[in-house]
Amino acid sequence: MKKRILAYGRLNDAQLAELSRDFEVEVFQGLESGDDPAFRAALADAHGLIGSSVSITPELLDAAPQLEAIATISVGYDNYPVDELTRRGILLCNTPDVLTETTADTGFALIMATCRRVVELADFVRRGDWQASIGPEHFGTDVHGKTLGMIGLGRIGAAVARRGALGFGMPVRYALSSPKPALEAELGAERRELDALLAEADIVCVTVPLTAETTHLIDAHAFAQMKPSAIFVNIARGKVVDESALIEALEMGRIRAAGLDVFEQEPLSPESPLPYMTNVVALPHIGSATFETRTAMAQRAVDNLTRALNGERPISLVNEAAWTARHG
Image 1 (tube, helix red, strand yellow):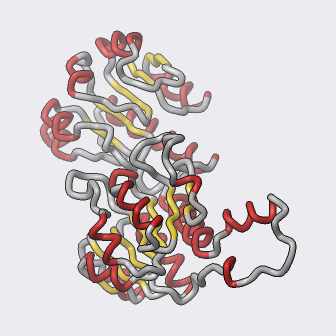
Image 2 (cartoon, rainbow, N blue to C red):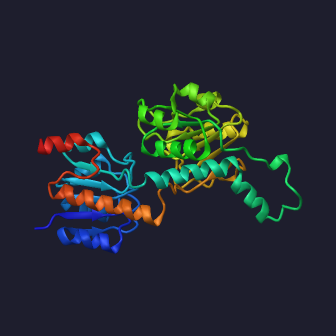
Image 3 (tube, rainbow, N blue to C red):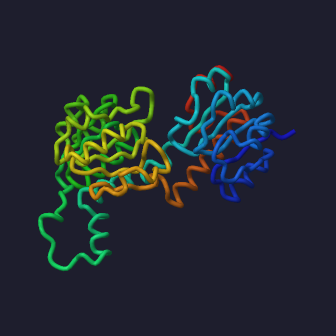
């Protein structure tokens, strides 16, 4: 009898067909919550889950006694109770590597757009307000040669730093990361304590994962350490930033501008002032949103889940302890 998979992420026809060769697959298109009655009922016979953007709670795990593995179509896994999954021996797989460069492209696009006021001035032209040569009130700030402060220097952070150092001659400083001697040699990067980095950087870019320790890491105190001319960019997770403190810092001129791809609440509330502020570039969480990368992420998830359910080690495993407990 084939093992059963519940698929609630964006998989193309070929990927669904690949899974269906070895497993029984039930597809939940457009699933928004694990509380969906049909999904909860289907958990009773599920051996594997594949998808993204749906929180899997311990309560849902109680409804899935046969569950062996979850393949999330994402790098981040804050929607999953990792310790609880490990306790139950359920493997959690994610999709690092395949979206590194694409997400770094998005981060650097935000740096460029925010520094040079691209969205604001494109709207200026679109409205028909460009009636004469622009003056200082429309000037942006240079990117080349500016000090780039990376909060987090993992795969994505390093890719952003390479773009800055090698493409734009930017001195790189980094914090909240283990020492990276190879990157220091390659890019001339220097490690700093967080407050020192915030005070030194012209552009601050956040790429740390969301954890209990990084929730609201960037708060009113952090913004107070930054230069009034600083550009702030977040491509990590929205909850890493205290959004009310960010709004106040922008309104009071404590920082110059912000480029944001992630928010505390997504989709962004219509009541949020952020998308209406001229010194903010706000994107709808598009970090990995290209045809090529989303296809590659889904394929990595398919490969992870297939291997896990066949008793093989997944390519990208989050909770190594669950594998060790199961296989030694």
